Length: 256
Image 1 (tube, rainbow, N blue to C red):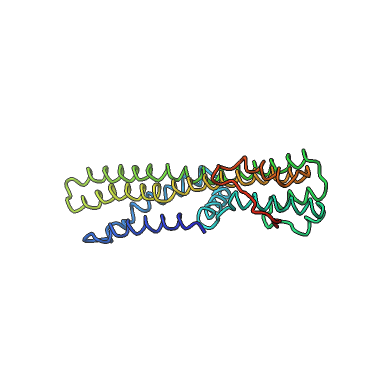
Image 2 (cartoon, rainbow, N blue to C red; image 1 turned 30 degrees about the vertical axis):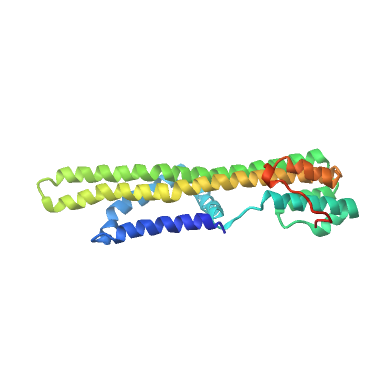
């Protein structure tokens, strides 16, 4: 679970709730016409823009921002070097009994065990990486669209409220309702965009980049094992992908 995402979300909600709660009448912020305009408009426009199945998939992908934590590059390097050592010591066939839990890495190691050509391994796994990035991109696009649509429908609510305000000039008792619609529509549009949609799309983009980098690292390690590269050389090659302070150095002994 990504604690940073949850802390940020709860902090934002707490600050918003506190600001609303210290006022004389917090219930006025839950203005149904403004909520209908903003939430209803965002839902309608999102369903028009994207197929329903894609919207469902986007929200499933969004859970990654909260509940997934990708493996660190150092851990992946250690795991790959350990697999290389085992293959050198016991033969590549032995790796079949020690397949990693990560499906992508396990698939690649299984192809190594099956003596699949290196170029075919590269093609298959590169295609899988690209397909994964494309799926992630769809989720990001959905939340970016919501982040754009929410303030726009907040403005729509404001314009509706302003029209009602001018129409009600001769009836002062209706002015408050029109003004509430104008202001609160803008408020809720901004909250949806800047507390939820835009941060989630950004976090999904970051997670996608991290996963892409990790899988590219795995691909290089798999190809190195397929080439029967010396574990020390493989370690150096994989370390080339890491920042200087993240480079892995074995302390001796074997790594499983």
